[in-house]
Image 1 (cartoon, rainbow, N blue to C red):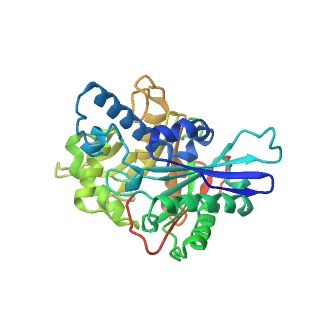
Image 2 (cartoon, rainbow, N blue to C red):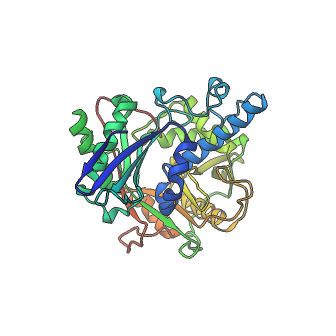
Image 3 (cartoon, rainbow, N blue to C red):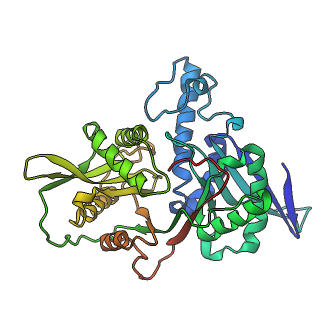
Length: 391
C-alpha cells in the first residue's frame, strides 16, 4: 500500500470493503471518542451484524430473509457478503495510520489517526464522514494536510469523484479536506455550506425535569411510534427533508419511516383535536446509536402545531427513556439492555429556536453557555460536479 513519508514519520492508508474488516482494526480506537463517531460507528456496527448474519445463513444453506432492515441484494447473500464488492463503491472505509520512522531497527506501533466512511443507507449514498482520534481543538492543518492528502489519493483510486458529494466532520477537518480535495482533483466546494452546527449532548446529570411553560394546547400523548403511524411519520420525514439540502420523495419518506419504526427508533407526540381526530404533532428519531451513546437525528414538528411546546416535551420524554429505562435496542447486542450514558444531537448554528429548546432540556454548550469537553463545531460542505445522495 503506497504511503507518504515525513521526517521521522510514515503515513499509510488502508481501504476496507467490509464492516467486519474495518471494525477489526478500528473499533477499539473509535470507542475512545465514541459519541463523536456517531456518523461512522453505528452504521459499521449495523453492517457487520448483517454480514455476520449473511455468513451464518449461507453456511447453513438457508436464504437470507428480505426484511426491511436487511437492505442488501440477494446476490450479496449468495456470495456470503453483506457489503458489495469494492468496485461498486457502496460501502467503504479508509483508515489512515502513522508510524515513527526515527528508529528503523525498533519501529513503533502504527497509530490510527483518521477514519473516512463512504457508505450507503437504505435510501441513497451517504456523505463522506470523517473522524479523528484527536479532539478538534488539538488538530492543526500541519497535522491534517499530509494525512488527508494520502487519504484522498486512496479514495480516488476506489470511488469516482462524483461520489464525493459532501463531507461532514468537525469544522477544521471538513475545511482541510475540501482544500486537499480541490488540490488533488480541481473540484471546488459550494460557497455556501450545507450545514454548520454544534454537536451537543446531555447526561442524566444535565437532563432537566422542568415542566414546559403552561400554554393552551390540545390533549396529547407521548409514545413510541408503531406500524400504524407509518404514513403520519412519513409526512414528517418528508417535510423535515424538504427544509434541508437533501429533499426526499414520497416513496423514500415512507421507506425511511417504515425502517425507523421497525427498529423502534421513532417517538411521537400525538394530539387529540376538538373534533376528536388524532394527529401526529411532532416526531423524534434516534437512529445512530452505539453501546453507550444515543444520537437524536431528527426532530420535526408540523407547522400547525408549532410554538405549543410539543418538541420540548417530546425531546425530554425521549431523553428520559433513553437515559433511565432498560431495554433491548436496535444496533446493540441482545444482552445489552442498560440505559445509554449520553444522548447527543446536532444543532444548526442559525437555528436559535431549536437551540433554546434543547438548552431547556439540558443539552450542554448552547445559547452561549460554557462548553464542556466533547462539544464540537461541525461543518458539511458540498462539492461541485458530484451526484448528491441523501441523509
